[in-house]
Image 1 (spheres, rainbow, N blue to C red):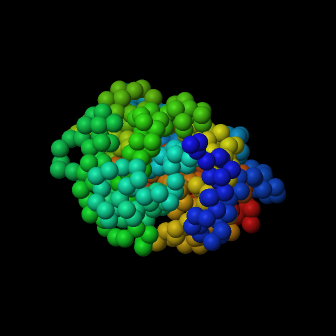
Image 2 (image 1 turned 60 degrees about the horizontal axis):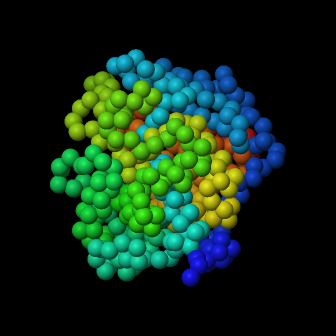
Image 3 (image 1 turned 90 degrees about the vertical axis):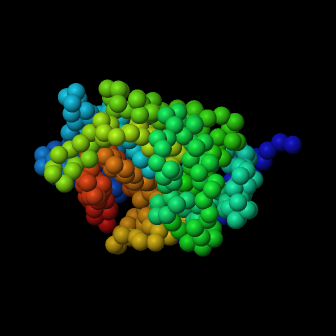
Length: 394
């Protein structure tokens, strides 16, 4: 029997739960004020000086990119990719993107929906064995994508295991993670609340691997990264992070003020998994957004569905409504829609914002974090862009 047609699949999508249509997607930039480059965001303007000031005080190391549609408007880099080797961060530097990579996993899953291989309302047990009935028979792909599955160890759903070093091979590590997750009881009944779950995306990645009959990482490389033109992006092993000359090492500032290269201490383990950890230059994330909006990765209706909010985030920020979409965060900020994802891990803090109604996007990739709060500086930079764009557009 042949699989369902694209028209049939997309027709079924309308029955899935959404956030009341509040954040309906449009990838077409609006005309008017948002179509011009605000003075503050122009090269040499107030925003670039703001970033440079943070870098000069040792509070930011990384790359910032602003783009309007396909056009790159501003790209600046500060700090060191590898201080020991004297390698500065630059336009081609690849940064660990942490949870930004959840968007790639979500797109890979949505492509399988488009092909009729996967269904958003199908349960985990339809695709994977070994889970208790409380998960296998009740948790759906929709739950995994919206952090409402109840899967994973609280608070963020990252299984730590028994303290033994994880396998160096990425596929073996994914198998080991899945084996541990199978032993965890559900934290709550699926769909009853939202709790951010990296483990839920690990399960989703295992489903993608099962249906594609190949390595999850190879599948995403071929079906997401390559068609998006993300030639510099990849899932890297610890050895590759240490030795590649174009990769930003993660630095963590200690209480003493010393910035420690985390690749040189302890058992350094990059967070490469379906839950995130892709290494990418800022320009590749711009390419990903363009490909997503141009239909190179998903049919337009399906791309809209994936990026549109469905489940409210429990603690939204001021002046905004925030929702989990399918691997994307969707926000209504002062009347303007912003979708994308953030990501953080020791030594890495990142943010990707897309303003579909204004035709803009911003990328902030950092490789220097504080000892306690990873995101302070990156959030300040991303927030400044949000403030300028939403104020200009009114």
